[in-house]
Amino acid sequence: MSAEVAAPATIEVADAIFCTHFKEVCTDCSFDGREDNDAFYGFDPTDRDPIDCPPATLNKDGVYQCKKHGSTECKQCYGWKKQITRARTAAKKAGKSRN
Image (cartoon, rainbow, N blue to C red; front, side, top):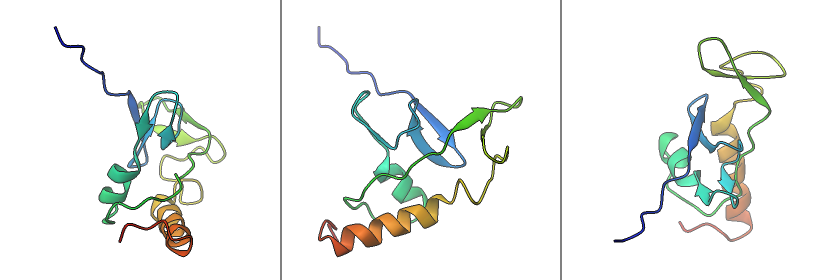
């Protein structure tokens, strides 16, 4: 019998994918969601720093909302495309980009 490696459990917060520890890259559960999140926002994959998910809670509908503002679509906390763009720019300046 071959041992199957289970995929890490993920959560979706305002269209971005994170592990259950709210990390885009997590060594504890061997998860890296950067490629999926880049693709969702129309970017090619690149070696960039992970985006940060601010503290979030589930609302009564089972959707994550930011703790700070209580919003499921908070532009201040969940501006993923802007965060990814900044991380990609920093990676390019640091010479980490694959493109």
